[in-house]
Image (tube, rainbow, N blue to C red; front, side, top):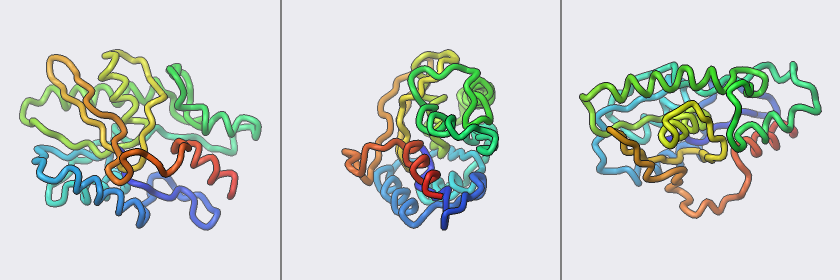
Length: 210
């Protein structure tokens, strides 16, 4: 799943992405997801170690000790000040589009290839461990796209058009083959009627208002 809603801009000022907590709305989203997953016994709960994933996991799977895997942290942006003004909109709203080339850098920072280089080995390490049956991974939109892309292609192709709403759930069966059973399920808004903006489009609107 993706972590629940956070605020990357507060009072017109950006907040460090590695420190942002869930918003009150985000905690409600996580509780709705927890209710949808009630009764599922998770053998393992894995987060990226960033506060927004840890808090989400604690709400969705209370009482289950979580493991922090920092290699599953979100794709890292660069210094927005290094981007030209005419590059900013495309950097926000155009990044997760179609098949994203490996050399493409997220907001001038980490490349898609660098993201795949750390996510896929971590995923394979998890799959090589036979001591679990059901795992919850509370992660990030960019990382989840890498996992979903790997599930479908078993290669390095990065499919950007998977939307990952806050606190959404993806369901994967893994073994000798992969079965993608569900993508971007939002228990608090199953028909996703809240709007048609993607997460990155919402961030772009917030960024322009600062």
